[in-house]
Image 1 (cartoon, rainbow, N blue to C red):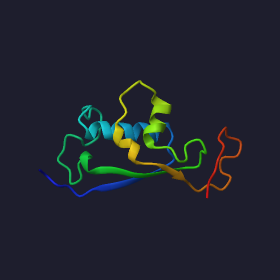
Image 2 (cartoon, one colour):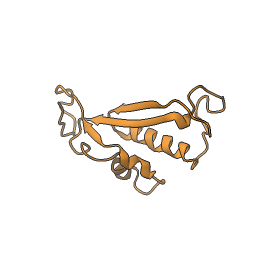
Image 3 (cartoon, rainbow, N blue to C red):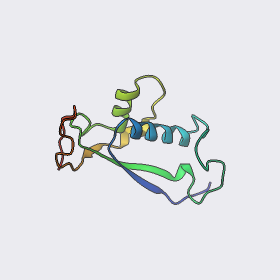
Image 4 (cartoon, rainbow, N blue to C red):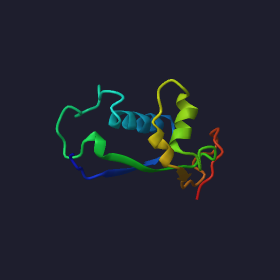
Length: 111
């Protein structure tokens, strides 16, 4: 068994792109999909894909705060692809916002 140093990642803004990122990352780590199109995936790197752990997520959209990454992935992706259960371990927390979302259709709640 090879032991790698972990790369811990926090997401700021758990929107559609970030959700695809965390779902794709976990599916790659679980061996559900091959890393087609992932830059440098074919090289032996100091930190392989398996060493990346998403440990936190922050957002100002009130409808996402308190939900798990799994819940948000289900909301965005439905049953289009399998969503890893490991995403249930990370909860979206309240981010910082200073009225930067004025005029957008988002009910913002921030620190």
